[in-house]
Image (cartoon, helix red, strand yellow):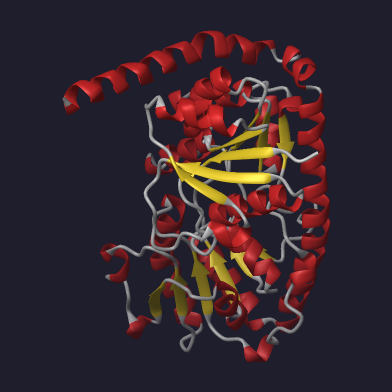
Length: 411
């Protein structure tokens, strides 16, 4: 039976700029593949690199924050499924969905756990190790509350699934593990060999704090690599490079800020090694998945590899200090046998954990099962019902107060 899906986005999807944009497009296309009607609505401003959703048969709508116009909109659209892109959108619009589309299945796409990323960032800025005590934050309380208020939350990392269950005591009946989905039929058929590849590369949206920190860390790591490989270069790609990033461009040192990549796969395929020295973050890393797809061995940290391989071998090397990272990068760059082993590990991982066909079928089945048994599913989630009753009242009244205030100011 065909369903109407409304996706409320935090930002317009930019699949060529960020892993979050790629993941969102995978979800939108999954719904369309079921011949479901899909509309993407967002209060965000349009952007330079946003995708044209019309090309995929997906309609779009600009919506307003703290405005009752959304009430009429969702009543008229009458969705069977509403998916929120990150918990902030659930906070803004969740109570309106409950009121005007009470029978719609509410899905939260977390992208990654924002509270985990923020906690690790805070610990990193404090130059100390992250502990679970760092998760006792306001943002954690808000994010977990949003998870509990929804019928299903999509969790991208196996580590985050464990964290939700063990630390936050979330019933995993409310969660669904969904890593990035890769169409295995579209994997590159022919790729450059070891001798045809040269130099190091990294890629990532400069607006994403973990990516910018990795670029700064590479300033410390790169001289250690360059000392051992004088002819090598580091090519740094990413959308929205700020002046502080372009100022780091140093051809003499082989530290090259390339900025926006028209074809991320091509620049990944031409490089011999991908570097991802991530010191904080959450979820799983799109750049490292792209490296696997293009059979480009990578060097990353424990944070970078987290939740991506289970017990399988990493397709490259893992190191957590500047010197060990540099040594690992040099070894992977020079050792053809290790390089080939890493390439082979890439395809094994993709087939084991990122098979789009299997992941898509599992997600659709889960959503349809919940839709068919929505009342019983919600009765098992008393905590979520309680949070809707209490917490969302405050959010509702705050939104209505802001709307009234805005009206008064405009008169």
